[in-house]
Amino acid sequence: MILAGLLVAQNFRPFPPWWALVPCLAAQALLGQHLHITAIRDEERRYLLATRWLNDHVPAGSVVLSAQLSGAILYYEKDLVIVRPDLLPIDQMPTLKRAARESGRGIYVSLFPFEIEPFFQRFPAAEWEPIGQVPAVSCYCLRSTSP
Image 1 (spheres, one colour):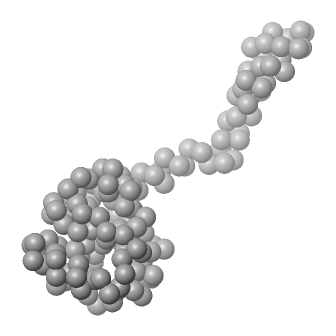
Image 2: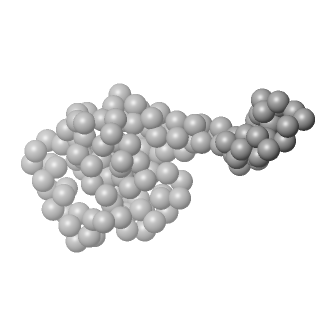
């Protein structure tokens, strides 16, 4: 947008080209505010806070079921085993529980608000114990495998 404004300003000789910068910067500031560009940082910060919480409260090597947060966990925390619950067949959950129990690993889940209901429809809520919450992310532990 700024370059386009400067290219247009080249053709107008009454004003120096740097004057075109003022309306271009003003337009960019207004457009940025209208599109909430600066709010992206706050939204994305939730991922870092949630992964830091998991790092502080979930033992290394634990299995973490996570969909929305899975990429951030993979990026920020290398000591957790990530399983996507939306891709885990329901009939494989007993196998996962048995493997976790045999290896001494707990099974945890981190969910954004829109993930909670679909998750508990697939996997019974009675089996999961709430262990904490950070902005927009709730964390649970599977009762039968907690260390």
